[in-house]
Length: 295
Image (cartoon, rainbow, N blue to C red; front, top):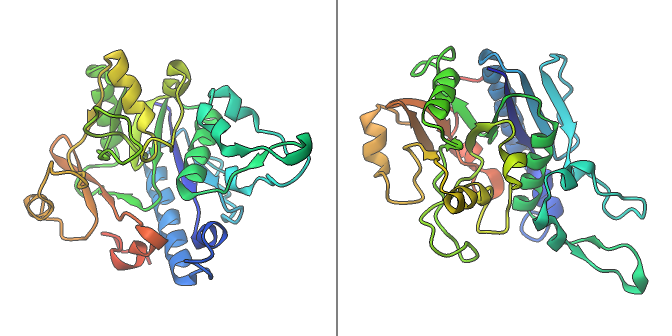
């Protein structure tokens, strides 16, 4: 099973660039904690015997990695959009990324359009799209970097193998831990949507269905659910998402004897993933912490 894992790297430098009014300065404590945990997650991913790990570097400052399985790739937010020489990267058009057209505003005098103000959802989604085109695995796992696997509850030798077997046995288009509720700009008639907290699909999922990781329909990656519903295709949202009423959070944690704050996600009735959920300003990486000792 050749699995490509795609994570996106960014720190509080992004907040300063995109929202300097609310975030005038970088938070070094948060940045250090994010980097420490991202490196820990990469070590976990290596235990899963990956085909490759793609670190989509939206800051241009992720440390060099010597392991050939780890590909650190400067991504969307590092591009010089203001340059007159800027050209759209090839992968934008390979995915037929229609949302991208709305990112431009025209310049006066017929000069080349320039990019609208960036936001966190946009740059994160675009980095995932970049990773999807770069990936060469038979399967993809799109994953947030403030997650961690619970190998003491679900063995590293079994968890991804079991998830892929479930995907294939039931002919699901995707399996995810997300269950994002509709927001003001979400399309009508849907109870919930996918995101990218942990999202498993086949390697050709996005290209085959001519969709992309979107960000304009309430949150990230909602097109995956919308497309499956419209085509009558099967998909699975695993237990453990808390922005809806599926589970009472404290009862759910008590059932599996997990006390660490954050979100707990279940596969085959076994806890397999903990998500700290960075939160506004990414400060939850300090407040919630890992279930593991990462020193």
